[in-house]
Image 1 (cartoon, one colour):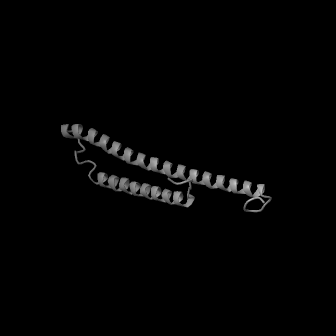
Image 2 (tube, one colour; image 1 turned 135 degrees about the vertical axis):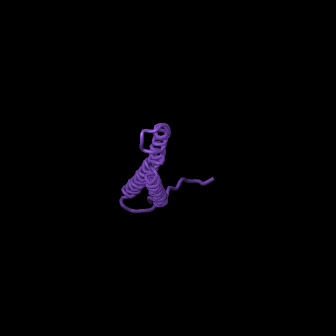
Image 3 (cartoon, helix red, strand yellow; image 1 turned 60 degrees about the vertical axis):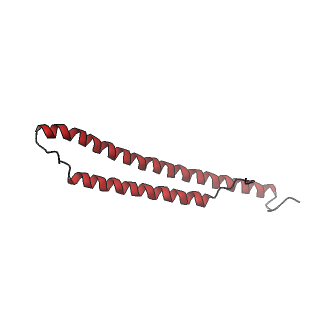
Length: 114
């Protein structure tokens, strides 16, 4: 078991790049999905026939749900990335404050007080 906790702000920020990259890929999937759906949007027909009335609304509802859920994932991952950046910034700022306090406590000298 380690004797101390060490946070590597740079590693945390690298992790946010992975999250943002994943978000970008999901956005691309949503766009490809939308493009594909739009190419066959009216496969069930556009007239007032019984099949169009029966098949169209559930299909359109499903398309909306799928798109909404995929976009929700991008929102979640973006929020997670933003929160992670804030945490890394808070860690670095706290670390800087502690180091500054230590230096002030040592009359500007680093190392143990003698």
